[in-house]
Image (cartoon, rainbow, N blue to C red; front, side, top):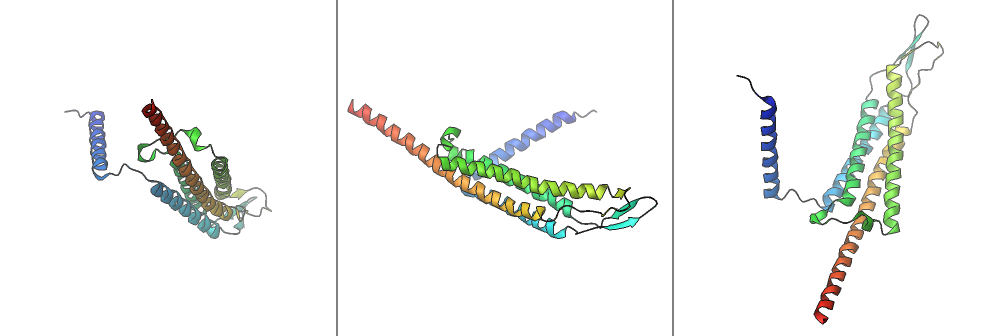
Amino acid sequence: MKWNFRGILVIWNSFLSCSVLRVCQDTNLVAVSVKIMSLTVLTLGVISFIYGVVAENKKPASRTPIPDKGTVICQYPADPTVALGYLSVGFLLASSIAGYLSLFYPYQGKPVPRGSMFKSNTSSIFFNIALFTTGLTITLLVWPTITEKIHLTRNVHQNLETACLTAKTGLLGGGAFLSLDSSLLWLVALMWAGNAREDYFDEIEENGDSVEALKNSA
């Protein structure tokens, strides 16, 4: 007897989707509030900050050069700098993506046009600052992490006077603090987006009341 694994997989996925949707509807887990999104952005940013600080502290200042026949082998002790750097970048991206999506999420099923979100110059300024800070933070975290990875993998040098360098000190720590700043800036942008949402719905309500008043007067 031959089993159709693809068909079984489709049926199983359909069953899981229906079950999860039913549970979400019954327990009202579908609703996402501004508070939940804010906590998510801040928590991910704090975790990224912690990983970045630990990565900076765990990074060795130098390596041990071992002379060999016509080469120098840089002995690198095991350290978690590269792994912690990647984790810091990953949580930074997760925090930034959550922050970006939180601005345009249709809370309570009420979407707002993107043009209305940026009517205020202050809202646009904080949004652009948050984007710029995120890009700068990614650069400060990825650059030393990749550099450290290269030093670890390419540890045999033909130059007998090589100094067995490590990644530049201070970049991971600076990126860690900027990661925390980035999450806070996304929260500020979310605050201004909340004000824009309120203004948008107030304007709609006022226009609706005006139309209703005109109909009654006619």
